[in-house]
Image (cartoon, rainbow, N blue to C red; front, top):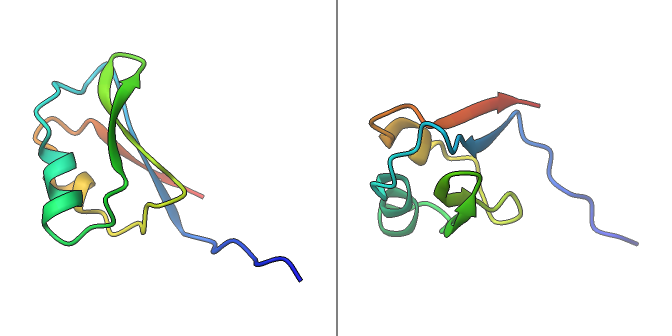
Length: 75
């Protein structure tokens, strides 16, 4: 039997036009207890992106971003 994918209330996405590449989201995710889901990669203007497969939806990146580039999308 296939394992069911967990359903989350929200998904987080980094908006490339707003991101200033400060790495605050990455730091919060990797070092402050997140899942390590913020990855360095080119995403339409931003050098950071959120891997939905490993993201635990803790919202650390969302709360930490100084320019509101991390968007919380209701599923």
